[in-house]
Image 1 (cartoon, rainbow, N blue to C red):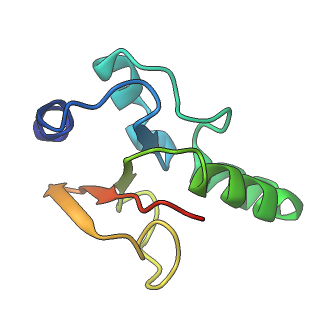
Image 2: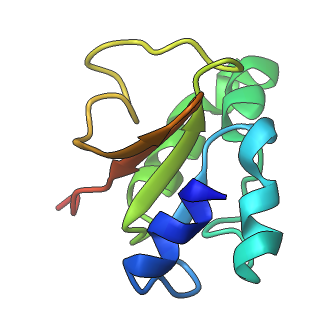
Image 3: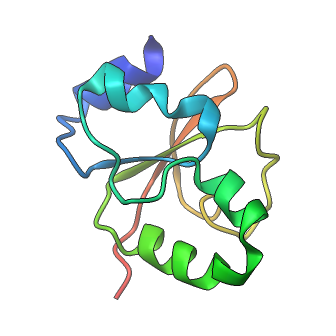
Length: 104
């Protein structure tokens, strides 16, 4: 899988990769890493629990990850919003890998 190959080429380790939506959580098992936060399927959680949006977003954005994987078929890009406001590091088909920035 090209996304997995790209991430491995970046020498990722546990905590380096966040899968933004349900369609890409299989990358955790492929890479043999646990999720970078307690939140899995982040885009779905944001829709299901709007009152927790701020908490979820802050936790995800500050978890120390290096990359965020998104399936644009599942979640339509929203310019200037996380994670689409991050630099695009790699794309293969519907999957995009964004490079996370440190949040102070």
